[in-house]
Structure formats: structure tokens, C-alpha cells
Image 1 (tube, rainbow, N blue to C red):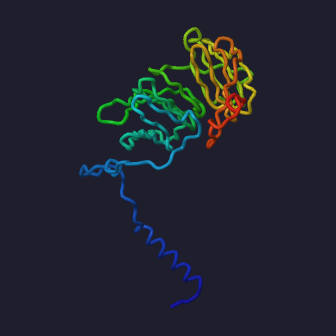
Image 2 (cartoon, one colour; image 1 turned 180 degrees about the vertical axis):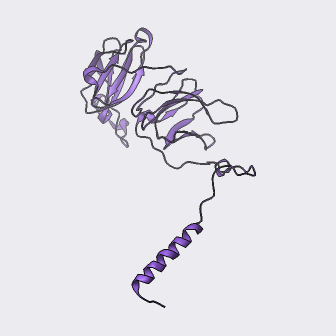
Image 3 (cartoon, one colour; image 1 turned 90 degrees about the vertical axis):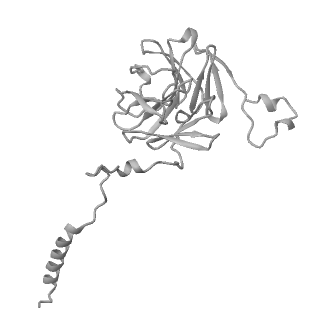
Length: 268
């Protein structure tokens, strides 16, 4: 019997090779030959802890049913605060959901995702026997989708011509109403309000004079932009003319009833 180190090394290699065929593998998730349901069909997602909301474009609420919708990775969580119950929509591509929006009637949900060649997906939330079913998908995106718009029905869109503003980060968007129904308005993170006409051209833009812009709300007569430090700017949709800056809200914990001067209410 040889006790040299070289022979022991060869023996160890042979023992390792003989055990390679005895490795225990995880059971397959595919349907078995006897017709048994796969493990994926047996497991049901009950509750998701946490969320991946990175901006206001990734959170929405139905004012009629009070349903709150938000992403958690590649899953969309539909939370009913009245029943304290969750239901879920799983993105089949496993790409992270970056933004979403409910239609005004709460019937449809639109989601955007990140990754290579992302898609805008449209879900029907009123499908019987299911929390939601994907009914459409909109391709032709090359990069991550940052925002989607609330509309009653999904519409096929085209890329905008950004011109000299092409290097900006657009963080929110809204469609015009009434006389400005052919226009689309968008804001950049650096603080620009831009208007695109019906030919997809960047028609005009205006500086918001803030360190950053976060959200936009649009009516027939006014555009409201939520900016840094609690600032809200107001503009006219047709000309992008500045109208006013709304009074800042008071800090949390401040009793406004104790104010001794009007400047406590109108300070900007």
C-alpha cells in the first residue's frame, strides 16, 4: 500500500469523479409524465412585502374603488385597503416594472418596464376569475420606460423629435385638453416644461427656475408643475406663459392657526 502524496491525490480525484453521478438534483418544475401539476401551479402568491416605487409615475390609485396599484420588481401589486387584501399581476418577461397608470374608469392598467427592448403592456382588470389579463403590448422602445399616461383606451404612439433637448431626462408627461388637445406636455428632471405638437416636434419649452421638476398635472386652463422644495409653478397651456407660484404648504407639525401674520400663509 502506497502512502505517498501523489497516489493519495489521484485517489481523491477518482473518488470525486465517481460521486459526480450521484449529485441530487432539484425536482423538475415541468409537468410530470403522470399529468401532475407543476410546482408553479401549486404555489400561490399571497402577499408581497415591500415595493420598488422610484417616482410618482410608479404609483396610482382608483378614486372610485380606492384600489392602490404599485410595482414590486416584476410584479404589480393591486392592494385593496378596505379588505386589506392583495392581488398580483406577474410580468411574463420578468423585467422590472418602472411605471404604471390606471385608466380613468379603472378598467385598464398600463405598465412600463426597463431592460433591453422594453414593452408597454395593457391589462384588463375586470376579467372574470382573474385579477387581470394582458390584452395588448406596445413595442418599438429601445430603452427603459419612465412614464405612461392615463387614457381610457390604449393608443399606438410614435417617438418624439426632441431636437436640442434630446439629452434631457424626461420624468413625467401629460396630454392636452380642449383647445390644446393635439399637444403633449412633458417635464425634464433638470427643470424644463416642453410642449410637443401633433407632428411630434418639440414646439416650445420654458425654464421652471428650480433645481428639479417632479410631476405635472394638466387641465384646460392651467398646467401645474410640482418642483423641488415644495414649489408648485402654474402656466397657461396654449403659450406656456408663467401665471403664478402657489403658496408653499406648511411644514409637518406646524399649527397654522398660531400664525399672527398673513405672511405665514402666503410666504413663497
